[in-house]
Image (cartoon, rainbow, N blue to C red; front, side, top):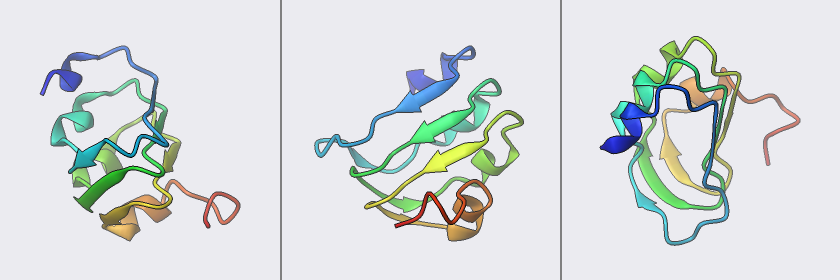
Length: 84
């Protein structure tokens, strides 16, 4: 996946993209500068890669209305205000 080469990427917002499906690429775990990942309202499913939990700058992970699993990782980035 080429997304793992975007080392300076700070925000990834693909929300409200019903055509986006599949799983989260583990290569996202290489994006040390990323601060925000928003996957809400997509057809992304499956486990959240554990690599995301080790991203040093990641402060916001939003995944409302998806079929993702691995809520322990998601809970560490989502406050009660962000959940639906």
